[in-house]
Length: 584
Image (cartoon, rainbow, N blue to C red):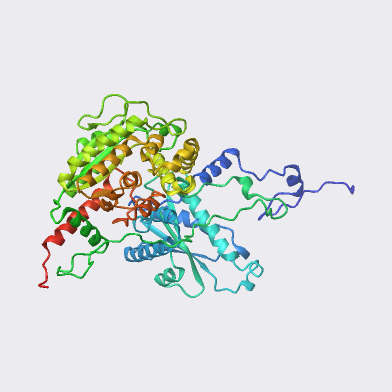
């Protein structure tokens, strides 16, 4: 027999049947087909942190498939440290939701105002809504030195459990299920709730169910919290690139908040502790002083709307026609502001300050500018003659409405958060990066376009901005908008007639700033109805020396926050007037 005779290769009946020759001839032969790879890429790209769920049950076979995917994750030393606690008990879920709500508030207290507001906006109701909760825990009771791979990296068991969670997430996504990973817990409290042994550590609560949302992008990116970094920014070669690698952003609040509001208390004779209504008591005292005890238990919402050419620069998530739609709905009593005003017992005056070109909204006060309206970036928002005319028109509206009692301000205008941010930069000194907020439904790209637009318009205005206190009307001409000019006049007219004025959000508070610059005596008539979620609003209120009655992170506009606050004030007035009094 020849020494070169060929013998068949012994092929194992179990394990890897491939040969070195086969692997050498086709190094990529272990790859899946392109359609499988494309499917995997699609599932990875489509994974989302789901926060809204339908109540429909998850079939047990599907749940088993998701848990099986988790159980197939890579684990250090094949230790399989994960354990899956499936929670359906409503009582346990309610207690978990309570723990998460408390932890959420604790963390928000450590953040800047804007980041805290955005964090608190994040929905956690999935803890109660999702039909299934799965708590992934890591069993760490085995000493690290006794597990292959953990002696040098003791936390590798935690990483293994994170891999299990990712497997579950992808398996759920591929099957149309949604999963949300909630880690806003004190780990010890969650461990106590689930009666975990010592050294069995919770990795978080997975909300699992059929999603009641289909987000096209990651939630925090959609909420303009942050944007995915380019791959090149996170890839280094051979060693750490010190000069190129920035640390992850921190949003800790380094400045303590201070309250600038002060008021007198004239309720010593009431059968109630002094300032028993807190901030509301101070506001009621101011209102009673303004009305000399005869303030009517009513008022008027003045809702002004205008279009803004800056919206064409992609600074809003909604089309321009929405402004007119809202004004028409307000006239018919069906817009959010109109409904809120009616519920508070307020009348409503709707002002069309140029919602669209052409005829004004039927039933609204016509306050269209007579001259072309600019986009802020390349041209002034308004002509000086239009500013003067609109302010005077607002004065007339405010004087007339003052007879009804409180005046609440409301505004609507697609793109007007960009206008408001530009004005806020001038009056507060904030930078565009600090002043520009999310607005209604904006994502990261929209926020960046808003910042760019504000930077460009401030550069165009230049030195004119420094003289805004001497000539507020010129600032209105430069940056607009028409609805803010009208509302500035409303503030002047109402205050001149002795009525208190309840401000709304950022765009609904800037008329107060401009009116105070025109007549400092106006400040005593201003009430901060709310502090909205817009980044610059808190600074504007501090500039005015006002403490807000409400902080609900509203983004609705239309005077909803002002009318909610007005309702509280009217109730406070009634309490002040009707509660029993002492004999001394």
